[in-house]
Image (cartoon, rainbow, N blue to C red; front, side, top):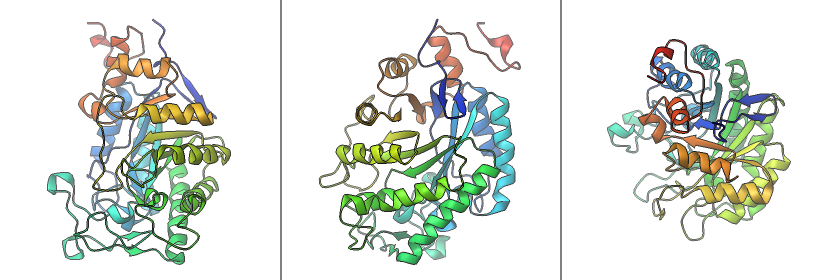
Length: 356
């Protein structure tokens, strides 16, 4: 049976075999930024499991940009070799390897979730964090260092260098992380950006760093390959970044050559009030798609094949990204196809279990 979820999506020179993407999900399993066999199995199993696109976890452009000491990185050439091997396997499964480049800003230097997700000081293996302004995510923590002009230029340069390595590592989609309260989102929102220079205050100033990083990434990223930006469409907090600003930013990003907006929300402030429910973030993706014409990806409590099919079939978004559901079900592409009664190829090693 023909379905929308399993229709191909062509973006520039890349064609995704379906509209199922694996969201970037931190695995807290790297050492000094290096990928391990865990990452090969995690990403590889979801590639063999039928997803069209796999976006690697938030991969830091610098050591200080990591969320935790166990995050993946792409700040040195030595990181490339293992990532290239992982990507070659993903491609062998007729899936597309993507990467999310990130800088955690003031939300950096915390322990892995199973170690409490606690702020780490230098004695505990942590480091001094940076942000647009010297205001922490929690009032109780040591304030981050407000970036000066030289620090901002380093961030831009780090994104540029990491992009060059991403090309060498064989990624076919690159996503810039400007969501979930990390550094670029911290610049976007007036709840975390109190600067009085050209990077703070007005909307035009608050989006400046994101646009400069887009330009820096584009200087290294091939024009024929897709470029995504992930945003938090709202802070879910009074006086914060909001849906109308997200529409305007998305329109500008489209004009600058960005291909798709990966639409999430929240993560900037601890007092956010998120009304969690199935599809709760989909309306933001729909609004951005409708008002700007850019491709959008929908995320957030999407757990069912028919639910995902409806999102694409009704034009609410062009791509559906799965996080927790793909942790529960690495074969999400194969099982969703079965649920929608559509035939898709299985890995030949598994074919004897198909329709059995």
